[in-house]
Length: 291
Length: 291
Image 1 (cartoon, rainbow over the protein chains, first blue to last red):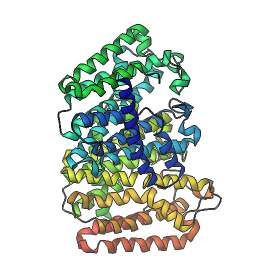
Image 2: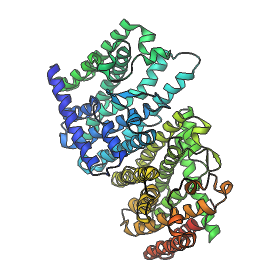
Image 3: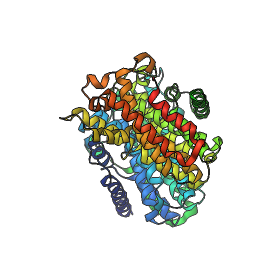
Image 4: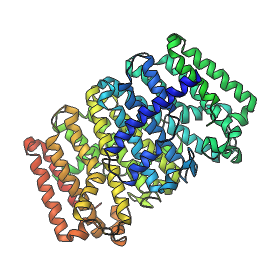
């Protein structure tokens, strides 16, 4: 099962990367485009995988779902490139490689991130994705997930937390992560339902539990992980005195909470029966990953 | 006529600003949202005006065109906020006010720009704009205009020019500006045709001439303008030894070229007759403006 999941993840990453490579090949060969191509490489591709699996679960062929899968990977990559900037988290390493502003420069990193966001919307609007209703629904949901009500809200709350007098409460951290990480994961999981014109509610329940578990696992990894395996600097949160799920709950309770959330995510998939096994595996992977 | 144009521009700016204010009011009161609202204020609103006028010319009511007009103003504001960053043009003043990273900080400026881009796509996808076909066509065209084939390409060429051994040629400057300034102006002018499902070719010809004239006028203003009236630092290009239309053509020939382009833009509007007078005025305004 775990092997099936790993190969499914690899297959999704190949489809997604090929689609993105096709886009970059049609652009100029300027550093900004090289930086865009660099930024989308080497990730797990979990969000793209969720799009493709959610599509398959709803009977949507991969040929329609690949562009949205590539879109969410481009959007995620943009958020990482900007997050790594000196004025944000100031990170030198990402996925074991120099961050974009270290390999090129800050201006290229700002522009590459900007253009990756644009590309995400362009890919959702691609004719191959489906009829205009489906495409505009994907675009509207993506804008909602990525903007100042979603991901950027989470990032802004994260910045505000750094200068706040008190560390965040569990409720505040949960709200922050629902934006910062949860919103894109939710879009990915719901994308298949949107592509099929089906009710996205079960996928939304699955994604809400999965997204929160993902972030708790990230906080656990920040404490227990090996920087080399993870491919980025760790223990930064503890050093900065930032509240995390681990600092607030303790390590054991954080693990128990993540595990309970994965059970919740699997329960949400019950209407789909065994067809949703790969999404159950994805949920289990999220809390067992080492990077 | 000039008064008519000025009042039309002011009316468009009010519609656009009100639509944007409605969006910001529905968001959190975090600094990033305050910065977004700040960034869209105080501009001439030329792009939003072009959307509304192009819509009216094609028989599309303002109620449908206001969200796309607000979208292009949000997208333009995002490009200015990121362009002003220390790692890009490093500007302290914009529209006579402190730039976003000077008033807040760099992280807030990066995020506010990011979220303004997202908002632009969200506004194009708003149900009030029209049916799904129209909305997805606007989104696809906006992504094309804003991304690494359009505006970001122009910005990347601009950065590359700074470290190039030779100053750019007239052809290279023209290509650079077609991306950096021309692409969004073209989208604005074509938006009305897209909203009406009409042929965008005449508006495309108008916009190509207008966009280039706009940039030549900007270069003239950089040499002849008054920094206080313009509201930003001037003579930066000459000081940096950057090639501009003025440095390449000379001041008199640059003015003659801009004037000829305005004639060209007006000729492109001939199919519309007198109905397009406000767009002709807009073209004349572009080369007579003092800021």
